[in-house]
Length: 311
Ligand SMILES: Nc1ncnc2c1ncn2[C@@H]1O[C@H](COP(=O)(O)OP(=O)(O)OP(=O)(O)O)[C@@H](O)[C@H]1O
Ligand SMILES: [Mg+2]
Image 1: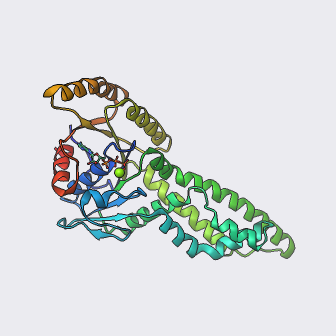
Image 2 (image 1 turned 30 degrees about the vertical axis):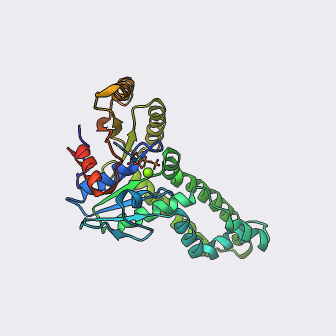
Image 3 (image 1 turned 120 degrees about the horizontal axis):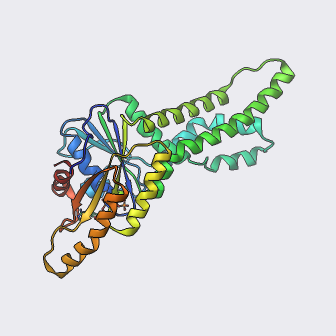
């Protein structure tokens, strides 16, 4: 079976995730290459280790660049810290005023608070970068490579975490507003209210895209090994709690050759796990990828993987 439906026009955002080292980056890039044959495609890495440069044999970095030799494919490595520090710089006055008007903290404490991270904010900012691209509408398809499971889950749950933070901030604000109204009889909305509102809108925009299963799909990558299957199970259950759809699963590194003792034994070891994947994730289209003799590095190797994934 090959990957299905990724070329549907409505589907914009395709996110690859899974346990460490199972082939997420290779599959994400091969998919971006396939999609770029018909669509203007942006490949986005949110993995702090950023291996798309290594895999493509081309430096990518945190500005969008064209992938050499591929007219329709561009790529970017999103750096959460960069996105976050741009956010803090932009909103420093509002954040300061929020703390100043809603807490008893003195100036030094406020300065210290501003250096502490708001929970989930780095990941939200990575996602905001992606959503901004989608809303600009420059590309038809956005393919996201994530870091191993924990990071992908944090990325996905980040809007919820930030939403909790906004609620607390809004409650603090409400008290301040109540106090002002009691003293002066009226309250004028200020930059802090505008800031919280725009943050809330960002959270909503991210959630709306993630939960729209015509626009967004998550593709888990797994290998026929016990721990990878367990981790994929947890990943899928968390995805479904966040109402994010997965329709198919890539089973990578499948031993096809049974020449020689090593291959025979490896193949035999994998068989029960391949069966377990079919049974455990029976509602997903299963795409098996053979273990190649060589690592997947450079466009030629990626093209071979692309052919397996897309038939
Ligand atoms: N089917 C395959 N056959 C042979 N080598 C493979 C296959 N799939 C991936 N690899 C190799 O396995 C290594 C890990 O692959 P990749 O970087 O795509 O995994 P990953 O899940 O993105 O890893 P990480 O969790 O570190 O980000 C790479 O060296 C890659 O070339
Ligand atoms: Mg990777």
